Image (tube, rainbow, N blue to C red; front, side, top):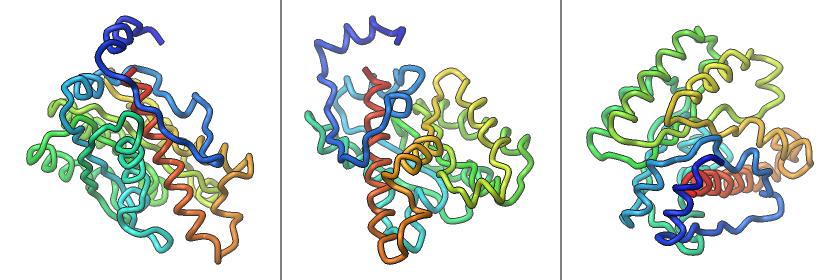
Length: 243
């Protein structure tokens, strides 16, 4: 990474916590580190205050699905991993959104939440609902731009999160335009993308966690394991960006 000067400054001020990883949660560095530094998070960590995290998204983010209880989704698991790391990072998490919610509907929620309470990091999961409904990619692009602008104006680091991997979704919707818009948005300065889709596909291909091949009776356990692993990897991703 090309921000060694930040690393040198940080070494004497703050030790990067280590995140324990279960065997099934092993993730290549490709997915566990952003492609640019999260300098806003670094600044917040150096201050030593609790890290305010705002997560916004659809069902898999808020936990509104049959196999996962509210409070057990991956943003909760990520902040839990940060709090239990060595040394621990104190976090305050707010989760907004809901099942079937588009980026267009999330933008005003995001704006209102940041006015009420600023956040150091915004985790924004989106794109799945747009793909299923066939929302025009240019409309999705405008919504992403509006949400990112609002978050950055409020001083928040933005981490976009793409759709989860699903063979059924891939076969029945055209995800490519929405992935392209997320990648394009992430190329903007100060914004990065957590590649949830590719990470989940890698786990499925390796036989680690594959929700579409697990027996119905074991699905709840598999969903819980998936969110735990996604949370652990996302926590590593955030810390890697703040090195």
